[in-house]
Amino acid sequence: MIEPCHDVVCSFWSYLNQGPMTLTIILHTLIVLPMIWIYFDEKKRLERGDLPNE
Amino acid sequence: MEEKVSVWTSNRFWRRSATWVTGVASVLLIFLTFDSMAQMKMGSAKDIEKKIDRRIPSPVVINYTIDYKLDPYRGHEIPIIGGEMRRPEGGIKSAYEKKEKFFGRDDYSEKEARELIHKGKLTIQAKNCMDCHTLLGNGAYYAPDLTKAWLDPTWETLAPAYNGKEYAIAAFLQDPPKMAMHERKMPNLGITKEEAKAVVAYLKFMSAIDTNGFPRNFGKIKGAVDARK
Image (cartoon, rainbow over all chains, first blue to last red; front, top):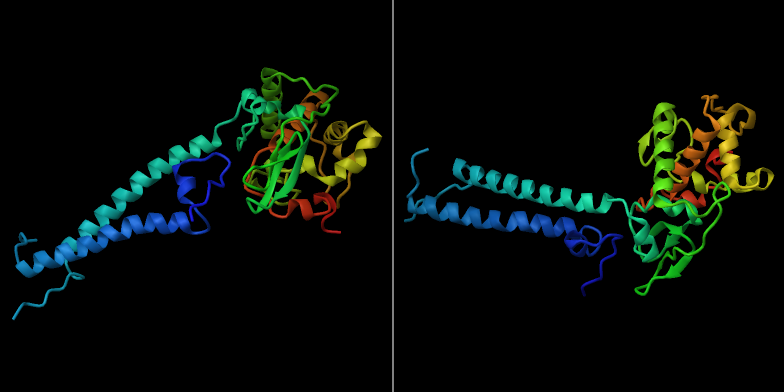
């Protein structure tokens, strides 16, 4: 399932780059997943109404 | 009943998201910059002895034969330095074994080769080759792309008459109108014999740089200078 590095000079990033788009998908997931957590965290706070005045 | 809340119109949500995205992107870019720097580091003569591939090989590659072949493993053409060998995981790689004479020698030391290609680079900059040509993706497309110009089959056809490909290219550079082979004639730029030798060394070195298959389909073009015919 995990392919060996295809790059000339191998690095952490080239191992993540398993095929076309893979590196992009991994990096976007890294950014988007915590945003989902931020969304629900904010929702919880708004429902509790414990937000400081903006 | 619980009050309906709107996260999408909350300033705090957007501020936290923007902070997170900007922060992660900045850290990523810093890491990727260091990765690119490692990729761009020039290899040494020791790497070639140990048959370690580098994107930018040591200038001593001018002592070796250079070819450009399709590597099915990586899916594009790669420079093959000093003959090819099979990669254990599949595909091909440089063997760094087969040498060839370059201006009568195949024993340029790392220092000599580096000085030669440095002089070639200075000449290329001084004569503004990029006004018409492209080198490694930079420059114009009025004249043929020089990134893999050393491998242009046209020079192979001229090589026997000049006693070698490098002599043919050097003769052309010293008086291009005399050897014109294209409607867009290259002007005489007053390149001296020594400068021409250095430029040819730079062209040979540049053709050994692994550019991820750029320019595309180079091997399939009959010869950049007569590709339009």
